[in-house]
Length: 112
Length: 115
Image (cartoon, rainbow over all chains, first blue to last red; front, top):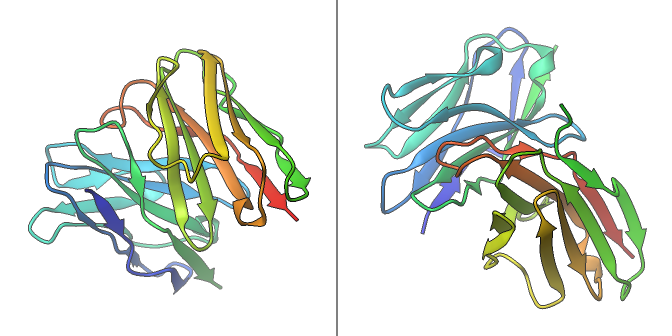
């Protein structure tokens, strides 16, 4: 069975500093990986996804993620965060099934 | 174009009452998902439909929960009888194609409080 682990429940970071949100997955087959963002009182929105090809994936709002098969990781990064990036970020995995399984989320707090 | 529409946005009810949550997916989408979000368990997949047919309901907590999709533009999630531990935000999402290719589009959620 597939699963997703987000290692940090909360990450504080100063404005304009870089950030990395960690995600590890487990699956017995090839996987497809996603990062979603949830702003306060809203539903989730897709940030980026990895289906195949280049292991470095670029998404919206300056975010990118790198798929590392040997480490079963898909960490999300941004070189310089802005106050508007304050949100909860969810890593998700899907195998050849139709289901997308989400991690428990990481709250990103931007400090002034 | 309208996104996924959920109603009600907020519901407060007493234990034992029936609760019905509604969802209108994006027109043309053939997959519909119901998720539940709590602080303790995060985002849990309850059930999903493909072309109005339930495909996997293994995430439905117990017999008190039921979901239907009578047509391509409407789905309901019903809890009867409701219990305080059902308090959560319930999200509906739709997609065109499977999660392998399609992007999930989420509604704004229905926040349920059972007293």
